Image (cartoon, rainbow, N blue to C red; front, top):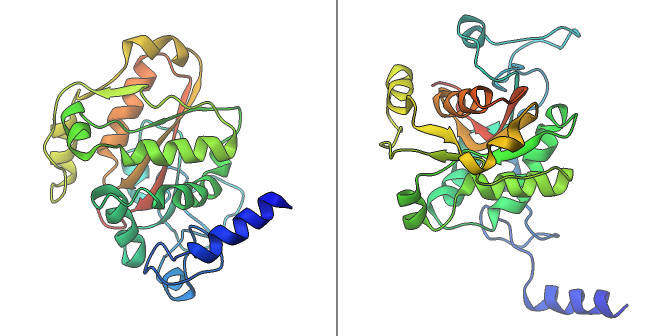
Length: 242
């Protein structure tokens, strides 16, 4: 009773706000109706590899998009919570560049729901890493916030520093698919102190956005080369046209 009273008092002083527009909502870390309608969640049939929405209905067989059929990624399965457009894009940019770290818990809940088919056999969860110089400037890794939220909700082991950037790379925005793969090259490696945790393990790599998949491919390759049994990926948002 005491705790419920405290929570009621707090809610009166600090009413819940929509993480999209700041308007009043019924629960913490929620979206108002208008903002919810502008977030395009990935539901229904999607590519098993990259999470891209696809037409038609699932028939019990594996379905991959044309891009993943032409160039299969190094990971086994992938899912995306929403599309990188509209309110979804604004939320991702707020989390990534606007110090909106309060977005991470609710986004982690969306991500955990989208990634449920990937959570079997207790995979080790890790984020796509930031180079130390970029982490110092930004003060946090948005992918690590998401991976921590997902791992906590799913009660999975989490290793935030499993991977590291061995060299700084330029921003990938505006780069072609080929340029992204060339820039990343061998820029991501498994942290030497964490390599033993990978042996024979399934790994779930978490990122905020998937565009071409170049960054996630570099992460997956690093894990597989270090002895991981299988790699899966989960992203908050999926760009529909890389």
